[in-house]
Image (tube, rainbow, N blue to C red; front, side, top):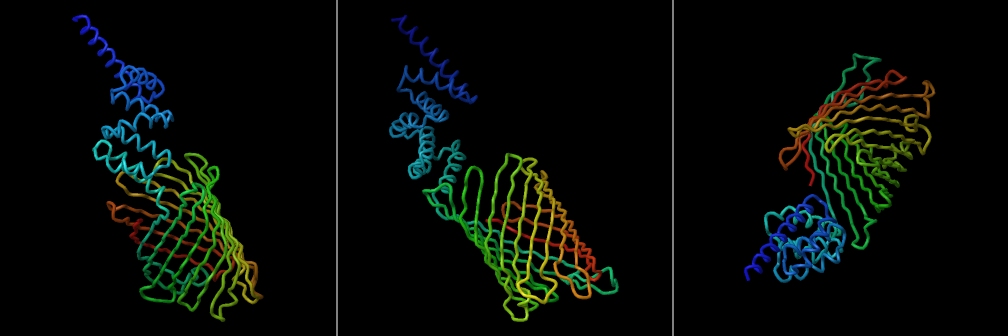
Length: 412
């Protein structure tokens, strides 16, 4: 009898030691080695729930989902063990049985699992909700010291007109994700902008822009063809709408770079008969590359080209080529302040010449700096400064301006 007790104690001690070794392997992410040890222990004592659950966890981590489910399901039904329930919910999630996964997760209330439960519930909602909405809203004030882009070289005595503008932006994105397709979504983007002068109304402007189209994901490429509809109103009696088609292509190259190509063709149509000579067609191409320096800091490179052609004769300030290039840098500091710097060069080459003048060519440079700070989870405050300088081969088209803006925005 005494030898039997000693033997049982010895076996128990060996079992306990092997169990601790297996847990150590599991915690060090050595799942295959841990699986081998837990499998042996499980064969010795199939009624030990702790061993069975760890065996199922190692099965899950090495991709043996059906085997893990076979072990976890009876344990959870019998005892409603939270650890078994969590990994059973993960198996159901992998099988895309989101209803059962969510049902189990909602019953898990233990504090140590709260973060994991919340993460999986969020992923389930993302996959099961057919419609997703996001919204950006902002309001700001901009001081412009040269609202009409008046000349500053040919006649420096001409006083420039200054004004402050209230800027309002609302940007809404809707996405529809069919449950049976992981490769295709439908996207609608609505952009509303309004600019109102405090002293003068000559530069007041409002814009409504809508784009809609499918979004395809193919081998790390994201492709989105879409239609474009815009409605623009200028206080200085210009009222315009335009329509067209666009194509966006995005690819994540690696963890440090991604690139996008934006191609569009639009037709500009003015409503008032006095403005009909402004009607035009616009073919544009943009190339954007983001270089991620770390999780928060990045550099953005952009090149853009536009070919604008008038539809009616008579005007010499419509048809033109536009080229632009810019480089931007963003840095986030430990105190939550984000600094953005941007330099842009743009050249505009007009196709038609006035009978008394040569072909016009403008070269514009813009230097920008913005500082932003997120106020808890409520909103973000942004302070920005822009210096714009335009040099033209026709003197009276030279100008410069400085703008300062203060904006409050929130993303929902």
